[in-house]
Image 1 (cartoon, rainbow, N blue to C red):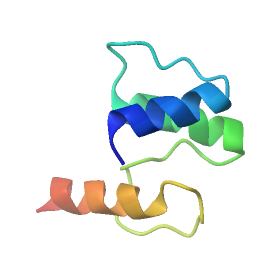
Image 2 (image 1 turned 180 degrees about the vertical axis):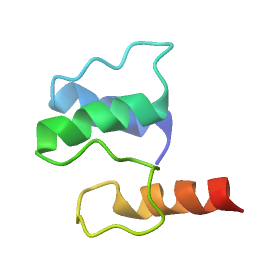
Image 3 (image 1 turned 30 degrees about the horizontal axis):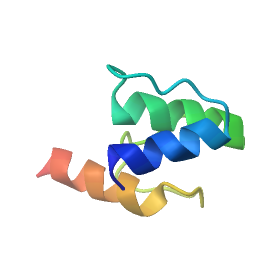
Length: 65
């Protein structure tokens, strides 16, 4: 998911997504609003089924490799 898509979702959740905030930070704030732990791109495995799961695990794998 690109940053513009993330910003559009942030707007729907009333999450601050101003220029200068990283994609990870914005997503973590959205996760809190969704009722999930703010864990985007911090785990190699995930039990949560949030909107970000696929992108998150992809980010984590890139970081690990």
